[in-house]
Image (cartoon, rainbow, N blue to C red; front, side):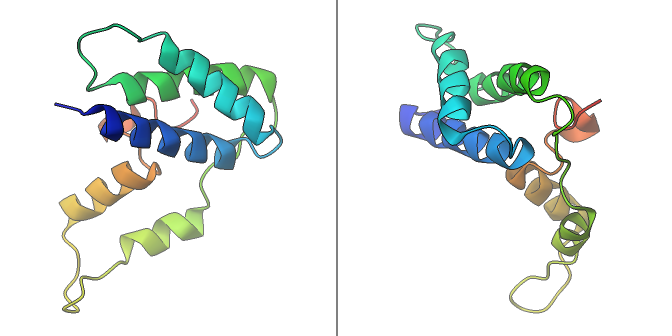
Length: 118
């Protein structure tokens, strides 16, 4: 179950990811779009997937406004993220790499269910 603080933190991460993806748009504008989408879910009892839904809808709106400036994650950064080792020097297992990609937004969900532009 998601707490209100967890949800707000996740929504702030949504803003950060969208600012990276749409650098031509102002931070205030991205915040406004995300806030509008977030408030659409006010009063809804199940909150676990709200940040995912907010990001999907906000990304659609921002993409329509910023045609041609959609920035995909840097391939070198994604490759470097896959080479992360644990503090003891051992390689990180493939599932851990997948979890890390989910967390940093580079591979939003398994099967690319909304994490990348189509």
